[in-house]
Image (cartoon, rainbow, N blue to C red; front, side, top):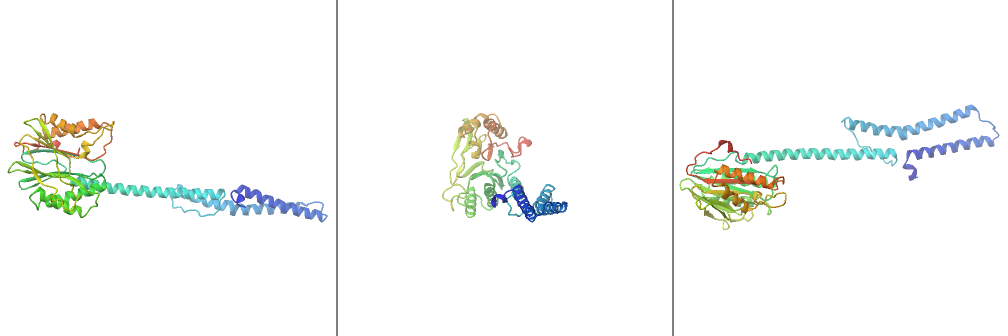
Length: 378
């Protein structure tokens, strides 16, 4: 019987065959009784019963369920509420009902995915805006220094961090890079930025600031989440620059007298890697004089690749500093390095967040040379 359940047409033929067999049996019965002719009345009765039977069968078995499916399809196409069609039939009507259920289920999932995606994009936009509000929108005005920083996140929410904080005679300049990029990195970046801003008002040394930042960050993040960082401290009264490294990239120092670019290991361990970093980091003096340049960067620059898979690299960055430092101010050096990086990458996509800070020690500097270059966006 399952063979007949799979097709309405087969069912109709089966029912017609049964009906004709019954009719033939009736006529054979009359024939046996000696009735030689069949009156028009008998034929009419036969046709009437046949018609009523198939109208009832067609209405309840075909028309009504098909109408139910069509009504739900019409509701779907017109944007009105629709319902799933529940049936155990496996014939053409059942296939239509099953197809409708599958389509509407897929539409429901797609609609949910679209709404979920829209929600996530909305939250990402909020997070991206919060990050933009945390990062300094303009380069600072610091007596004795030219400072130009540029930042370009790889995704909506980046993991690179930098800022400039002046407390009395000291200006703290720092750059950090959280593991990975995206929302998780953005959360660490936000946490570190907030803690540095708070502790710079309580402690007078870069060392104390980073020790306490590490203490609080480690208690809040997972083992695999941390941030490399290096913080400079410019003392306006003594004209001296010191630094504390926390596992970040090299510090580049261009010495104007010799025309050489020195790469100094920042040292230390990343913020959030160990519970207590007090013995792993230290404050050191940076050998830089008036006219020298200091360049800070994130690994998104040195690890940037071109279409051939070749990395930009530290040596290329050092050579560019040596080439442009004698010709330009901090603004010009930053601009030309960034341009060289873009030309190097060509059409290759950006894989990581990129931050570049160029500092020139300039005893005559009290204002930014070009106000139009103050923005820190790349």
